[in-house]
Each structure stands twice: as structure tokens, then as C-alpha cells.
View 1 (cartoon, rainbow, N blue to C red):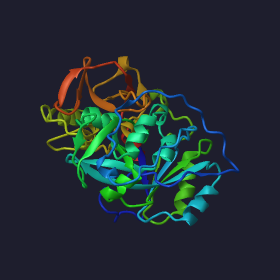
View 2: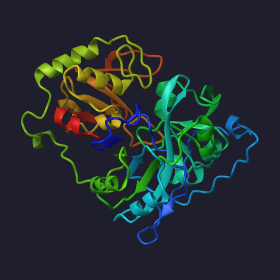
View 3: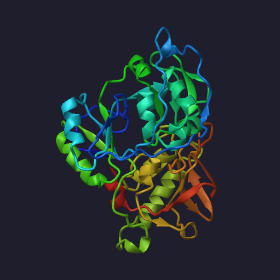
View 4: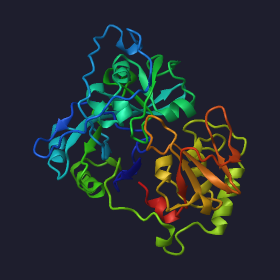
Length: 388
């Protein structure tokens, strides 16, 4: 998920860009004058197990039943604010051209088993409509969340070592991993109920999802930022934008990393061979896959964005047969959100790649795996700095 900061946000508290993530908590605000019918969906299985009758956060509380899924609303903009959103804010945003649905949210970074996890506390009945079809359609998943479980992303669960159905430590006691389920928001790795979020101490009403599937996302973002308080940050999710240049020959000479920069980046990455994978780590002694890329390219003076799906748009796509050392390889490995870019590696040359694979493994050079390969990107330093 790309983020954009207003010019007056330099004094924001730590984690507000990376760690504060939308939590969609209020009822969906549908705009009758512009709403179109939501897209119907069919049920698909996700990896869940029924929650115990009394989860930690649901003890002595009445758990509201989760409403059936009526349809999907594709999220296009994601907003995080320093202060709670007011009804006046929502009314102004609702009047923007193209806006079809809104959902207010709470957002924070939470420590689970020692990992800083970007977490959403949601109203399961309404939030589910904004997630990918497989996730949205699972009644069992959202019932588990309502009962007090935490649903984690496939990436956090599989690569980060949070085993399905296990209990993990949290700020208010243990939480059960009730499902692997991807929200579709690149920076979001855990979802809990609004009730559980309050027990965890999440702030209230500090985030917003905007569905505007027929509006130019960049223009809408600019308009929206003018309506919200200083310190507001926005991100485009499923952006509606003009088709980007994806062919290398359309890029001007000098758009890409120099031979000297590539050498520095590759040597920097190779210097970390044998270092352990740690989910969310950015170095200098532990890394996750995108953290290794960001660190290595920074040594060559290239400012890369932090997460995989942002790094995916840092340059044009090239054929695997044309890959050169220093190009980036990307995979879509998440079965709960097949379109999501979930892993990145650095092409080493001669059919080899250098990457940080997953929890329990180390930075290594390995043969390129073409299963679920999404594509190859040639990094443009200028394009990388513009990813927000």
C-alpha cells in the first residue's frame, strides 16, 4: 500500500506512516444518489477453525451474530488521521464526486508474539464487504473474529511463524489465531473485532476506507486531503489510474540504476547471507524479504519503498528471459488473495536469486522458482522515490 504524507506531517509520531493502519469500525455509509449494486459473491473456503465458545476478549460479553454478506465494495482509498474523524468530515467526503461507500475505522500497530503487527479492529458484518472474495465470503472466519480471535494474513502466518489455531501473546493477554485471511490491504496483517481492539487499546475512529470505483484515485486523494485535518495520510488501494508505462523501451535513457549502483546493491545484499529471516525486520542483522531489498538498495543511494506491493511498481516489467542482476522478482503466493504481491527477491544472475525466504530460514542464494511468479521489475530510482 503506497502512502502519501502532507507537507506538514514531519513531526508525526513514530509508526504513523507504516504502523498505523485502518481499522474499519463504524457502519458503512452508503450514498444513495451515486450507489451502484454491490457485486454478488459466492462462498469460497478459507483456512479457519470454529472459535471456542468463550474467547479471551469475549468472556462475559455478548457476541453479536455476523450478518450475511450481501456483496462486495472495492476499496480505493485508505485514510489515517491523528484525531478521530467526525460526522462533518464524513459528510464532506461523501459529497466528493465518485464516492460510493465509506467506512470509519480504528487503527494501530500491536505487538503479537514480539512482532509489531499492523492491526485492524473491525465490525465484522460491515468490514467483510471490503475484503477479497475468498475472505469476505467466509462466515466462519468473521464469526471467529467476532468471538475474539485474531485473523492474520497468510504472509504473517506462513512467513512470520504464527501458526494457525495457536495462541499468541498480546497486550491484553493471549489471542487465538483463528484464521489465515488476507484483507486486501497490503500493510494490514491482523484483524480483530472492534471489541477486542478496545481491549488492546487501539484508538477510535482514526481511519477511513473510501470506495470510489469509477473515480481517478489520485485526483480523489488530493481532494480528500484538502477536507481533512493536518497530519492526515492517504494511501491508494486498488487504484483507479491511467494505464502506466510497463515496457522498458518507453522509459528514457538514464531511468535505471547505474552499473556502479547495481554492484553496490548486490554486494550489500550478499553481505547479509546467512542472516536470519524475521518478519517485519529491516536490518542490519535480521530481515524480511522486502526489508532486505530496501536495505540493500539504500546502500546504493536508491530509496526503495518498504513493502512488496510498493516495490512492484518501482520500474517497468521485463521478461524473465531478459532479467539482469539487480532486477527484482515478485511472486503471488497468497491463496486468500491471489492478486496480492507477497514475496520479492533480487535476481543474482544465471538463474539464481538472493532473498530472505521465511521464518526459520536465512538470507540465501537459491535457484529462481517460477511457481506463482508475478513478474520481473527493473528498478528506476526516480520511480521508486515517487511511490507513496
